[in-house]
Image 1 (cartoon, rainbow, N blue to C red):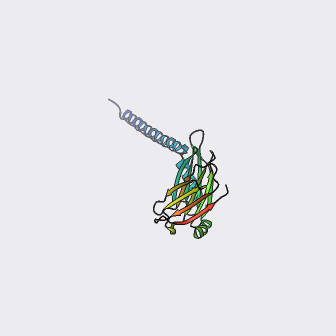
Image 2: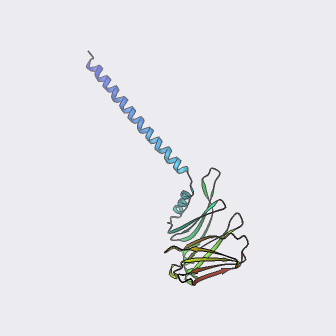
Image 3: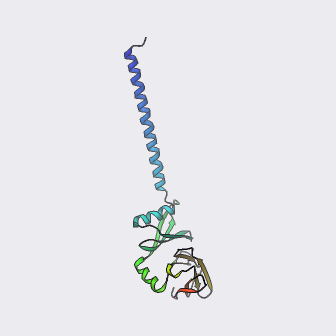
Length: 198
């Protein structure tokens, strides 16, 4: 016969073993989740980097276009504060980092659009070609943007409904002039801006 004291001792041992096993399981789960979260945080995909940049400025993307060129990714983004182009490039470990930023303040932009209806600028990329990026006034009802480069090549970007941003890869190493036009539904030019110095 097993004494009551021996039974109590065995019962206590079982309880201790159960508690230790339970605590061990909790620790394993906690460590596993922590490692998983750290590995996710360590992944710097271009989308994660882009969103972190916006978060650091405390802004939200109202409209955005992504373009890939010369091994880099460019995000043209309209926020409540500015129109910005964020240039990202891959690092050696295949993660991404910001390598450039181009901005125009919305207050300045609003005044420009009221007068001209169309704002655009260029970015010179690594292979010597230009990207044209810009924004047009919604009030003009522009449906299509045409970029005419040195009177030789015409590039067309069709705007979706209620969209303002446009982004061209013009594939022209030495443009003498660039004219950007905003075209409405009737194929009429309702906004135009020409520049001849590059």
